Length: 218
Image 1: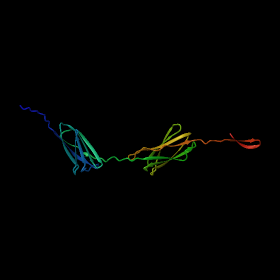
Image 2 (image 1 turned 45 degrees about the vertical axis):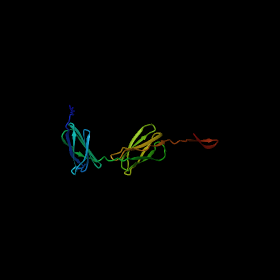
Image 3 (image 1 turned 180 degrees about the vertical axis):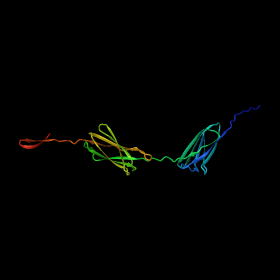
Image 4 (image 1 turned 120 degrees about the vertical axis):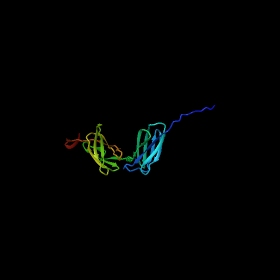
């Protein structure tokens, strides 16, 4: 007697994915690399002179989910569709990479001595690198713990001069911040400090001591 072991055979279902890849200006992306993923399986191909690609998968069951990614040089793009059966067209539009931001450096310098009198003006010079015209936030920490926030702008060479008056005795600390923009990262400056002190006052009085006019320190 011959024993036959019969295994069930499942027919594979073809799924074809095709489409066009376009550059950001809408022209065909010839020679672009395209990767198509279908339920965990992937195939990679290259677009023709018209930007067209096409791949076919054999799957156990449908519908399936499809993800298409494409690239050419530094340009990237992707598209996807769910519930795919049979053949499906998926076009991909490439996008330029986001601009690479540059780091910045913000430096403060105290113009004048580190000890100043109350109700006098303090002058601070700042430098933002790379040089550009930008808004700078000035933060002043007073001896009492109060915080004052103000704003100034740099010149096109990245420098600025900021002047303010001091009205408390004790240690002041000042720093600046650049928020950043699409091209540059933000930065925080070094902290500069100075002390506000009142000048010592010396009082004298005039008196006659044994017939001699003298100045007496009070």
